Length: 443
Ligand code: NAD
Picture: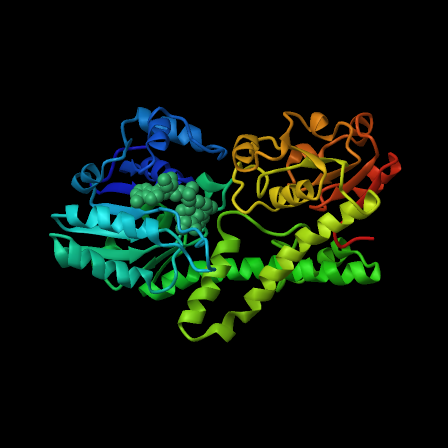
């Protein structure tokens, strides 16, 4: 792609979002400097290795490193001197002691960068933050930067899906920019020019609306998942089939089939903490009742985990003590190595704590899982994970598990019992091969 831009871009925070954003901005032809406080991440990215699993990202990274458009650093002074535009992509996890977002990394990034900005600059937040954060940060930049009000802040929330990060960054379904500054809008139009040309909607709002677009999108998606999982609970009570129900619902265009897959529910580094932070913020704003439904969305989601454990326990006679359990899946979703708030590992760890010997296999997330859950056992193949198992749980719907051969696994398990936590398998097929098959929301 041609070198075409004068704007130079810094990306602050090079985790799942920032590393992808930095590489894709370079792919669009910009000169980009990625910055992280984690030196090992910067060393890895600088040498062309993505420190997490994201399909397609390594090619974009290495291509743009080689082209000289992309570099990485841990030095804020270098970023301040280099860039006209700074994207804030640091983490905003849930606080340890409350539902609210922990903004310490955003605040640290602002405090590191602001005193170094001696000339006009644009700062664009991409991290997911409680509404009102952008205005507060803008005031901080004005107060702390030598360039004062010549540092202008906008917010452009990120909608990428892990495992589709590159595609979603290069071809987002919309670009939202919160700002009241013509310069910020013009800079974002320049950065997004090739995408705007291709017809991707470019929406300009005020700061607080842009912040709200992100959290309300995640609230809606979480609600849709918990809605179908609530229907699964009802189906379980009457022997109905939630898969047939979901399919019938999906033909109504107003409902649609996406995010309507019943199962173990959502996890990961976004949906759970984002809906909780949204509730906490609504509370602070005095509009807690407006989002009280999200409490139920969260509770339904958690109940699916408990239900999955109950089904497995029921299959092996009522107690996990001393039993052998095989778990397929550790990542919070397939094609990712992200285990943040992973339903699969939550279930596996709970079963382990109830006395079972649990062995977990995942195609990509094993190393992360081992670090976070040293009490579990890990296997390097699906067959090894289920060897001698008295019950198998499928908890992340990797293609490898969907395509599993019930006869091959049947030869190594102690008992042919499977709980399909993701409704990923064909029940008739597995039952025809002698397995006791159970799933969420189905007879
Ligand atoms: P992450 O934990 O993978 O990455 C955050 C990075 O920020 C880490 O590498 C960390 O070392 C770095 N960091 C922390 N403090 C820093 C500082 N002061 N200066 C520079 N770097 C610092 O998190 P993530 O998944 O990339 O999420 C980042 C933000 O993007 C969050 O607000 C998240 O909600 C949002 N988001 C994430 C996704 C996603 O799919 N992961 C999608 C949309 C939005």
